Every structure is written in C-alpha cells, then in structure tokens.
Image 1 (cartoon, rainbow, N blue to C red):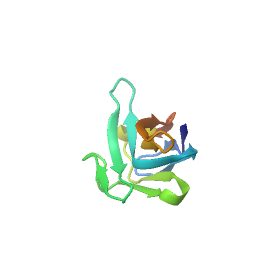
Image 2 (image 1 turned 180 degrees about the vertical axis):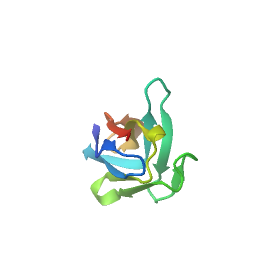
Image 3 (image 1 turned 90 degrees about the horizontal axis):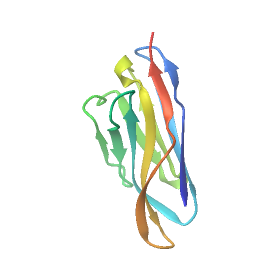
Length: 121
C-alpha cells in the first residue's frame, strides 16, 4: 500500500512562483514514473509533467520553460517548481506515481488528493 500526499499549493499573483511537493509513503514498493496532473473547474484532468526514475522529463507545451519537475528517489519525494504563473495555471494539482508492489510484483497507478494552486491578482 502506498500513499501520496501533495503540499505547497496556495494563492499567488500572476508572475509568482510556488513549489509543490509529493511525498510517497508505505513499504515494499518501488516507484517508477511520477508525474503531475492538474484539473481546472469544468475541465478534464490533464498531464502537466512527468519524470522517470532515471530523471528524464516531459512537459506539456503550456508549461515548458516555466515549470520544473524533480524527484528525490532516496526520499520517495517529487517536486514541481512553478514559475511565471499565469491565471490559466489555476487548478487542483495531483501527484501521480506508477508503483510496483515488491511483495506481489504487481504494478499500479496511485494518486494523491491534490493541492490547490490559484493564480489571481
């Protein structure tokens, strides 16, 4: 069993920055890919960025150059640095991880509860 907990969201003015974190806890697991998704009111959840266990990253075009994903494998923690924030970045941001249960060798996707990012003047 794995739990993902996001933190770091908040209210920020356009052009501001936030740093989100996602901490994974549990036992007997290995995290492969991790990523951040977001869902704005009335819209579908969309992929923001993802990172492999080796550190390779992918970004949605809308956030390239502004957001940076990173992870600390030793601490099972992932981060998202959000810079130059725009009102359209306002959304509930979710942490996602592809987890291998080492006890059963079964993999599955886990989601956090989300952390709210609001960009408004």
